[in-house]
Length: 325
Image 1 (spheres, rainbow, N blue to C red):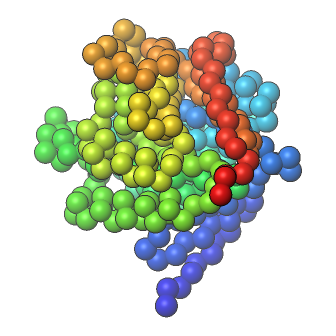
Image 2 (image 1 turned 180 degrees about the vertical axis):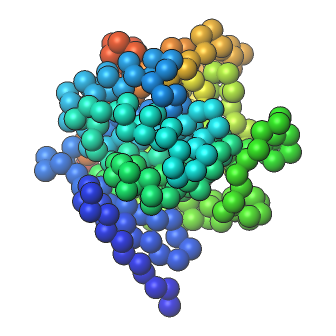
Image 3 (image 1 turned 60 degrees about the horizontal axis):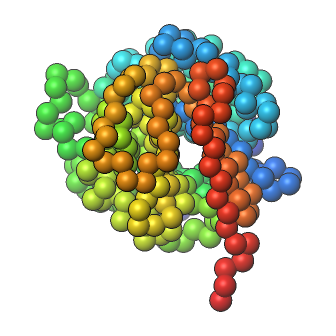
């Protein structure tokens, strides 16, 4: 019989339930009116440079307006090569001292990006950083149960074969991964089970790498072949990612799935766009910014903001309150 370990993280009233061979699950209390709102940011940690501080300021303003419950980070949290260790001052200089607005003093749920793996990846996962700043929660793969929505965070960097076969002079911290094929197989198995068993009104998957993108990196072929079919089979509503330093919204042409890129937290790539595969593209912006998500049981609203806090793109979706039998 598996032993169940329950760990209470008191800073934000989070409850984490971890069971052997399953993804760790965190309980995120919803508002009393049942609504849920959060911000999504990626590719940001540059000690305030490249407009990181300006984006953070606007996040604080929009966060207060929407009364956000938490923040999601889509990875590449610290540039250029992650953290050197638990004592690296970049953690405070790129996170604690940048996102200072009152509205952003909520839980931050983060995944690792490829740049994070180029440093001491284990440091970002450590409890020590949570003692420095209790908002911080970064794991490889995990689940946040926010009542009307479940958010499934997936560690996408080990999917990408080239990081193992052609590292281009970079060193990756693969501790904790072991055999990458076995690691990916186990992750996919756990994700399938969790998605299949989810009864949440909204299912959201978050990873660092894109499945669909017309930005610099484009589609991630390993995710297209291994992850996308699982999302479609389990009626996932949104896939959110960073990696490409832009903001974009692409609709899947074969299902209701929406691909949402928020990787513009600091340095952006102006004019870097792949125009040969534009099917389903609803919006693309090659500057800095972030995204907001607002959910009720019957409706979802996504908005993309630039570095000045202007709304660049807004998209709404509705769901039936009760499925037909």
